[in-house]
Amino acid sequence: MTDVVVTGIGVVAPNGWGVAEYWDATLAGRSGLGPLTRFDSTGYRAHVAGEVNFTPEEHLPGRLLPQTDHMTRLALVAAEEALADAGADPTTMPDFSAGVVTAASAGGFEFGQKELQALWSKGPAYVSAYQSFAWFYPVNTGQISIRHGMRGPGSALVAEQAGGLDALAKARRHVREGTALMLAGAVDGSLCPWSWLCLSRSGTVSPRRDPQRAFLPFDADASGGVPGEGGALLVLETPDGAAERGQHRHYGRIAGYAATFDPRPGSGRPPGLRRAIDTALADAGIGPSDVDVVFADASGVAEQDRAEAEVLGAVFGPRGVPVTAPKTMTGRLLAGGAPLDVAAALLSLRDGVIPPSVHIGQPAHPDLDLVRDRPRPARLGSALVLARGHGGFNSALVLTS
Image (cartoon, rainbow, N blue to C red):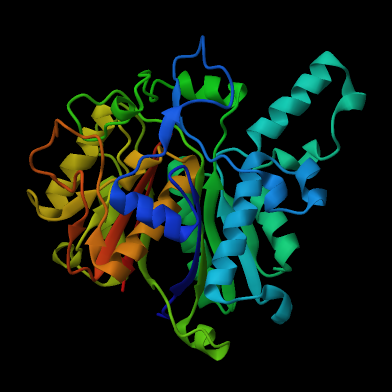
């Protein structure tokens, strides 16, 4: 099969703006979690978040601001960085040779809440015309493709946390089918009262107020996840296609992928995560012993963490592979979390180092070789990234150097 490589990365994350800043913070173990400041969380069940704060006027033209949600503004910045990192300008490429695939959990919730408030308090005449698309889950794909003239394949996927990996896999398929360049991944997040109520009522979000004790995946004191915003967008090409336009450097290869769906609760059938791992490894043409590091989904919900730890033990054996969860420094970024893990995994392959999981003081699974507190130097040739989405989605992506 045709090799598909990553030639550019763009990152916006609670602990770092841009690839260099994010990677420095991640290796230093600097967390971006803190008390929610976007609105008053008094009266809500959850109070800690991973926020990305920036001044959009400094990064985007004024004409875009009235028509974009905070999430989309972050995505536009990440897209610009990824294309610049790849040395690619789609406007100079032939028509339909560059496309966009993104994932989102819902869309521009914050924009939607503002317009619904205007509707209820003032009437329909006060609702922005941009509400027709700014709330919509494919909006990031649309705005990125318009801004950069990317008229090739364009789509959006919804599978909560797993969606970001699904978007990368779909982009890989487009490249294999002949599209010269694809921009893919996800930047997501929704830190407004409307979405915060939905998230906190799910029963999967930590109620703790201390940012260092709120998100503790694989810890005996785990109490749930912490929502955040941000993510990563990646440029995918074939090595030959990249070389033809003068780009000879790449971060790594997307070697394998699979997605599964869990059976209905109470069916007695096992979750689908192991099937996703086994199938992704088979797609990559490697076995468990060839995997050098796993970037775990790490939900922070004790039952879900136990299920993931058991699957990893069954596939790799007790302490059979290093496991890490750098999302302990950013929170769970909805669809954006898994592509950010992919970016971290590619940087790990480049630098020969595994980033740490932070704040975990009482590991609950002794058979899990969890990388904690500080980076671990390692010879890395491959990485497995896992993501599970609310409702039963499982995705697994294999990267090789």
